[in-house]
Image 1 (cartoon, rainbow, N blue to C red):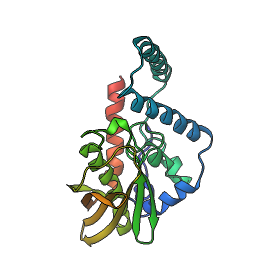
Image 2: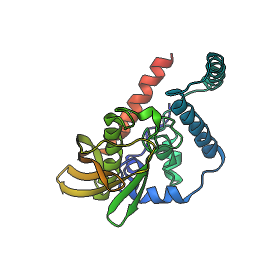
Image 3: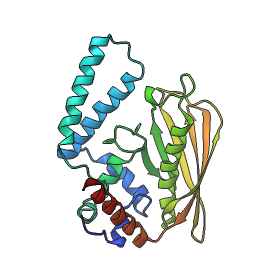
Image 4: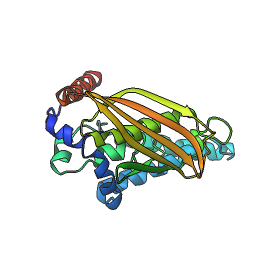
Length: 245
């Protein structure tokens, strides 16, 4: 079991931390190398398989061959311990690198095959983003499922609340769906900090397809004690260790 991370490191580097929005731009400016590049390459390949799978017209024998190949990859990776992205946190924090969180986020993560992924950057006092949702995210015909839109807003607004300097966890997320959101088209997010009242942080944002407003989001975040955040990591590792025995 790894050591409990220093709450001060979490305050500086964890998702939603004061440096979070600024580091988004730093992330985009650095090309991945080594292990990180290979993890992203692997996730990108898996992501393409997922999108192809939901609408494939290949014959049965091709599907069977693909299943055999994927099962072989599953068995290969199954030989190795599965870690939380919080493991090794102290080393990453001391190196000034938040890549573990960025790369493995289910929304932003280029190394997470579940992620679209959403790309974010800070411009002035506004957080901007872009994303293209592929076939696996389809809800209404040709459109993005509303649940995935909500998940993306949670991450986007959660990143915007870092501008408050008092990061917290989601207390309430409200989405207003204004127009069907198209698949296979680059969409853009805008988000900003609206207010801070005690422990309550309010952010708002929009999702656009060209000039069409697809959705609006409002997130209420509640500042947390980072000692509690660190303790949550320890409790998670204890549950994992118990499950592995």
